[in-house]
Length: 70
Image (cartoon, rainbow, N blue to C red; front, side):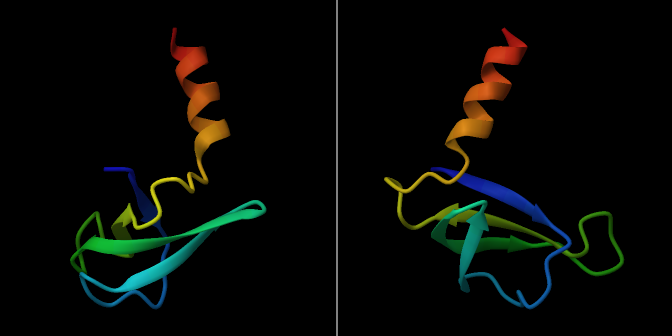
């Protein structure tokens, strides 16, 4: 599974909701798999999993972080 945790998200209300996530000039469709509970440290955060596995919008950032941690 390829996914992400998104912070400071507005308009996402429930698990199962499909959203578009854009990073620079790339975007992909994701499904919400968890929503942070209000009044917790995870409020306004959501977890998402990609619905288009071949369309990785984070590839460059991940490659750079992996190389930096080596």
